[in-house]
Length: 331
Image (tube, rainbow, N blue to C red; front, side, top):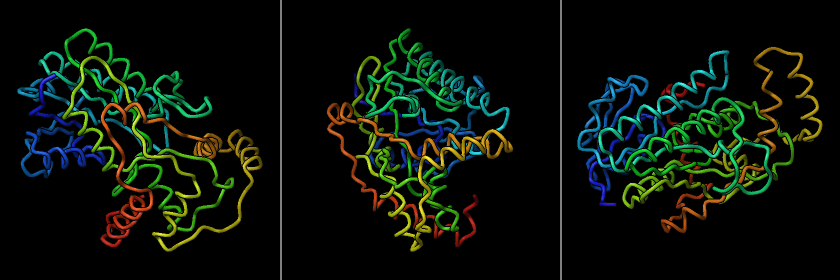
């Protein structure tokens, strides 16, 4: 494929989207951005407000665009309600289909879909690679998997190339997700060890995630390609210690044995209110091994993550402290 000159980034005001925009501008690309917000403060970027569920608002933003990086989506609903599943379906699945269809109709050559390793599910053991069958568990994971299927179907009916990037759990400055919640719990003294922390997790610093996206933008491939993107795995102990050391606060040393915690959570999830009903699944995920193999992407693009876990967590904690002092952190 030809070199990309003009890239459109959806979800440009978000946690990852803003980081991709900054790197794309720094690389000298012509960048346009879109989000539902009324404006975005990016120097040298053409911004248009658009809703991915409104086809009319999408119809005019693809002119002259070579590549679309679709970052917009819904995640991090930690108190689900009866409508959460439909919200995920609408924004992640239908929204992706809308953007991909509009891009294809406009003659865009390359579509990059930001997906998630959650599509693999939690039932398999060992290390997940791109050949591992997907078995998404929960509304979010299912919506991301169905978004992939929608995008593949659209790309295969057109000349538009498609690259799907399944990102490991993101963290970094302004993190709205699980690592950010863990940091907040440690800061407030609300953390209690469950298990011994030896289970491994795959994380990805947001700057490295954006670097991976930039590699794909600058070296577009033909056809449909799917890649895992992850830093080397780390243990839960390393994650908790990294955050604690940066905060200067350490959790209570008592450990609740994993079998006991799982037994109690299974019982409590059956008898208490909706807020507690997901406790068992939360602990199950906490104790699980979540390791994803990124070698296919590394070999295809010569890519390696640059930010160590220690450095990335310190940056997140420093951002959190600064914004907490300014009254801008809300949990």
